Image (cartoon, rainbow over all chains, first blue to last red):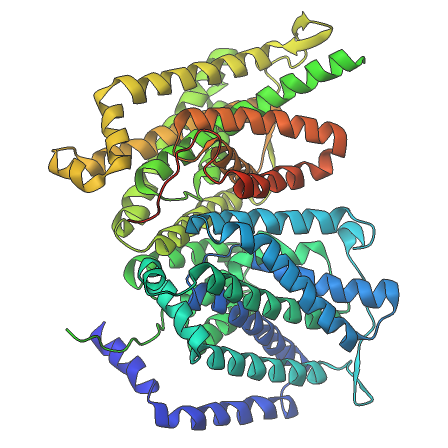
Length: 322
Length: 302
């Protein structure tokens, strides 16, 4: 384990960080020039998972709360945008603030009563709430019932109508960069430090005067808003929203991406999400293995929790004085 | 159907559903009480019980058809589920007992994924059907409605199991050890109680109860599929929370209450909304009475 830790440590050296970031960005930005549409689509899917994982990372990674219904936050954003465009003819960009408000309301509704209770109640309430959202979406007329909403109009940006996959590739790349910057800013702020403190020792944090319930609710809202925005963009990218894309498997996938990647660590979370998006594509044509995907993930999850409880690429902690 | 008959019919339906919830909720509550783990895989143990019962009966019915075969199949399902529950405790939860609660919870999700997806791969995602050995219409007439024999058996079996468990927890030394461990694990160790053995036993009992519920559900509803453990797992947890998690009578009361309320909800709102009703109830209960009806208030991690 020592060698692995040291190798991870080398990658953390601060002076290379911005260089590496810009190099990765330059390479990813130039990819659409020479890759075919299929691969671009897979990469787009990877970025989509990265957005969700970065959002959930605020809740699970930074603050240590267990949210098992993250797909519901993403569903709320997607349906808010879908319904406003489809039924009310709104412009996509105007639906974004509504999507944010919807996400905040949802988060407060679920978070406010449960966050001050025992920590594992949140897990079950978020799970139950995700089911409520999914069943409601499936049964209401305005959400298009079981088949969902279709042919949602694609938006334009500076007169360019976003239809081609390469357009969406750049939109999502910009979003990933934005989310990474936000995550990074939060981490290094007073808010982020409070969250880390809560994650490491909630009682001690409370004893030191940190408003734990307040900060937890803020983290929960932030994560939900990031999920809501991702959902809005997903709705217009796919031009359709259906209740089947918000089931428990989706929430579990996002959760697994965050945990396997290393809770709280941004590059880890991004790698985890990329792994989750690309892995099924690699094994798609082998029928038996494709079925057993979740079985492997479950086993992996148990083994990782026992052997490396901080995730595969954990956040490096400052050495404590002994 | 008159109003009175409707009420009676829904009460019977609610009691049946509630018995299933209560049997599963007991396992949740016992495990939570003793190691503070929300055992996510518990619903999948129930599902495994149903599958085991169906598979064993499939083989056994050649030699021992009819009711005797069913009883033996349910017993076999109990043993299989108990072994599965014990293995999960021994290999997945055991090494993490001292770890943060989040790690334990995530491991439980892992166990749940492994069990449900193993069954999915084995059955190729297809639902399986229980052969119609039992006459589902024969019964006795009570107040204008027909209560079938199988419904009577279901309610009797679950009531006697709950009574037996209450006596076991309350009157035996092992039961006393369980109650002691839920209060203070370290002191129990000092007092010479084999804590790991008792924890293992808790999982075995909880899993067997879930397997009985699974086996009975498989006979009663006639079909099983790999995803059946998920929703009923969350609902049984809801039942445990309503009754007060960690409390054995609470789990029974919560289960029956949730079953009855859901029957009422289905009657008034329609069956597509019954899950929304149950989970909405969970959130309301957590806001109004977070310790449940019979639970004691508890200060977390002192």
